[in-house]
Length: 150
Image (tube, rainbow, N blue to C red; front, side, top):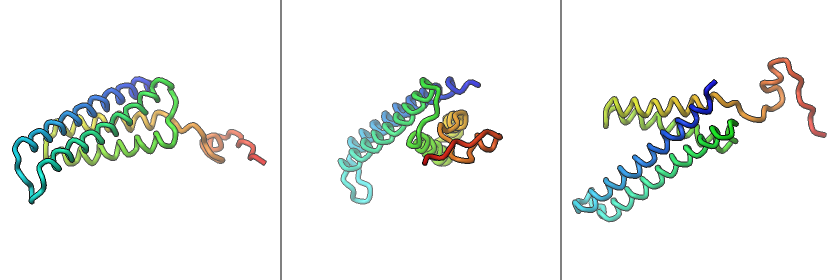
């Protein structure tokens, strides 16, 4: 199966998405800062800095998810517990943002987000977890259980 290329393409897609999100938030922060318009009495400096921080945090989160996928592709092994949880949250985030993007941006943005969602989920499903517990996959297939530690 082509699980290494799928994980590599997903890592590349998340890296491009992280750069795009950070750039978009940087531009939005500049627009808010230069217009000097207040929203419900909020300080414009606070709104622009908040936009930049949010873009940096979300971009860093996507870069971290991309790094986990790239490590999966290079090592051809499933990620650990933290990596799996991180990728699951990435998939859920793409589903939620994709649902919002239909109304706000349109169907092409939704399609792009769903492609990335599909790549992340396919990467997660292609790699089985490393350690199976007692009665796990090996026990279900008729294999012998590992001896219990004394």
